Amino acid sequence: MATSVLPSMSTTWYNTTSNVTWPDYQNNNTQKTDSWTSNILPELLARFLPTILFAVPANLTIIIIILCNKNLRTQTFFLGILSISAFDLIYCVFALPINIDHYVTWGRWRHGNVICFIYIILINSKIYTTALMITALSAERLLTKLRSVAVVSDRMTRILSKVMVAMPWCFFVLFTVLCVLIKHDEMTRENYLHETYCLFMAEQTFHMPYVVVAFHIPLCLLVLGPVVMIVMYKCKKSDWDRLSSGTQETESLFMSTLCVWIVSFVYLVFCTPMTVCMTEIILCIRNRSTRCPTINFYKNAYTVSLLPCAIMPYLWILTLEIRAILAPLKERARKLVATPDGTRITLSSLRHRVSADDKEILH
Image (cartoon, rainbow, N blue to C red; front, side, top):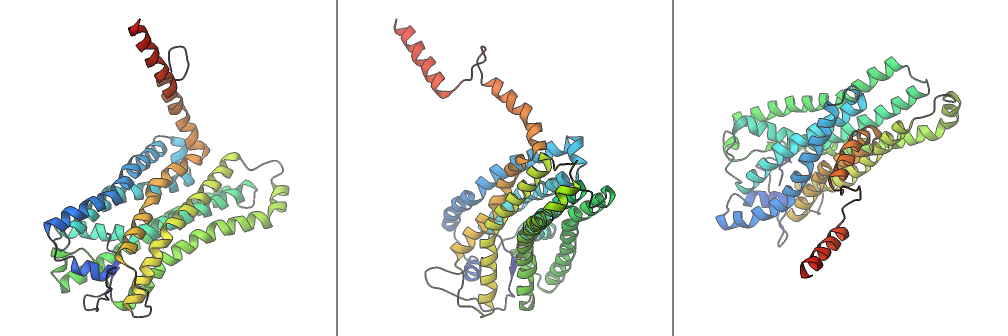
């Protein structure tokens, strides 16, 4: 599976009996046979391939819809959706295939330093970057609501919205710079790493801060965003109703806000197991907990954390603007499966037609 932040090589690995734990499992994988590879490859494909097959076309469709529509690509909210879809697309196209290859050929990294840098950055930044992007969308929807009731000026709303949507990318760039510096220093000191493994090694002092910054805080912000919005809606409802007597909240704003809340909930649910797993791994390595997660728990948690890549593109269809663009395509598809007289072709009608043709042949 993916290799996130790891302890120093000098750390004593912890062991279990039947259910081997994740660090020990990765350490023992250096001695593998061809039969092991043939056995593990179907499992990896079963875990990753469905996500890739669903996520790539879905995210690509969302990207094309936004880029090809001038109205959407000039709105900050849809630029945020574009960022999430682009990041997930890159992750599924680049990181997951390399993840499979790295796991199967563990101990024989064959893609060079540059690919290793990119791979490590994507693997370690996936959860927190997407979580921050979704949180930024929640804040953008709140600003849009404030603008609709004349609490915040249009100019201020546009500036703040763009800043919020850009902030996750700023954090991503900052992490990229730090990761490259740490990895370059690490390769200088231990030359064997880039020839055998592609890992992000870190001293034990930084284990827990990494988990808190990369997992705990972003997921907490996912909860905080919708909660703040709901509280403000409840507390300021009377004032907003009075201020917006002639400017009712549009259905578009309502549906886009509801969409962001649903996406936040889905992402939180699917990424929480991975957060719990990484926390238990670090606590166990530091001998602060006796609960050491098994490799199966890690595999399942990581697999589940990938599912939002394939689910979220379909949730963006809840927005009225994207539905309006897809409506003509839906109508065109409906015409393709309709008969010349306008009736829709169904499975039962096809069966009836086949049975009727059979009777004519018999006669």
